[in-house]
Image (cartoon, rainbow, N blue to C red; front, top):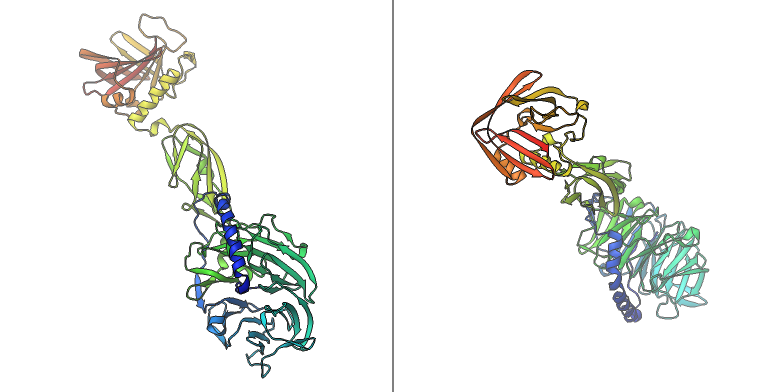
Length: 589
């Protein structure tokens, strides 16, 4: 498992690399906006996976995690040496003071190799030098002492070296126990050096080169985006991740002939080139740092995991490393290397659902929106913040986590959270009349009169009179008394005057507000209906008697009434001396 940051490339190629990067940056700037839109969908997201900072260790340009993942070695050439720390607590365990260029540890912890100016030094389990002098390697009686990189083959004391960078370049296998060269081959590629159970990997400028443990060349994995490679990492089971100077990280399966997980790469939820990359030993998680030192975490499928580290601004471009299942995440900062507890990665979002409660809302009402989030560990939680709610329907509005019913009709509600989107179809219904204020109640009735020629929820005029089921009611003045069934405060009659013959059709509807416990005044009527077509005043009160089931309920002393017209409907509203509505009558003309 490779856990180091990229060490600087050869000085003589630096200018060439810079030129390639400049060319790529010009190309990249054209697609950054498109990539960002595709990956994030403009969503407003909120991290729900907390990765607390558990410790801080020394600054490093390379991190080497022990095979049992109990400790991490932080190597910093500027600090002249390597220090070992406990992965969980950050407590310092060992210090190896040596002016070194690279450092590696065998799986059993009994061999430590430091590359120095004129060769390498091997230390035992207690960090004591195993030779009295700096070691070199002899190939065809030629001494090799200019080593650049070193890494152990898993479960062995065989070291793979990159050497003679300034000469023709060599990739060397060397058995420390037998003190013999296992293979040697020429190479012009000098970059990161990694090993797995099966292969050796060398990062070139625009490709990764794969060899067997005995130096046989297997294949070249070229840059997908035609740009330089910034960093690579690999698991012991040959899951290889490659970070180019682009917005995608490419993942290759070494057990499946290095087929890519996705042809175009899967980590595209950043808008700057990836500088550092790490994969955990299980191959389940990939971590990245981009050019702006922004941290991102992804699962194997490429889905982003939103964490509390995403908005940190004190990281550097590396190194980064992870233990198995991302339980501990190590990230270089300006003042050292921070250790974070990543065990809550199991709480990451796997699916989202809009609750059915949001499938219906009344016009004029509002709801506080909430989202059901299912986590990787199977738990479900409800959230109300950090969700981007939207709709293209005109029947509702969404604003600051609130849904408002605008008018009756269907709608589609959309929620976007942590890169996931879900929709729900719903319907806006009318609010019950009984729940409305007096003015809104009047407006609804007026709207119904305009549309259907009757009070809302009332029978239409075409309804056969003998089909209306209600209590027996009567309302009358002087010799004119009108009988009929009363339903929800509306009396239906089938004649309009005493002289007219009865009909089997409704002729008149009279609504009694007091029956519905409403006290409506003239100002409210004008506010809802507008100015009256005609105002009639009586010189003295006209007394209307109101009976239910032949019992006297009330006597309305009417002093005035106003008339409204809508199409072929006449509306008459009767007031007492205090301008309180006692009756509302509609009829056809």
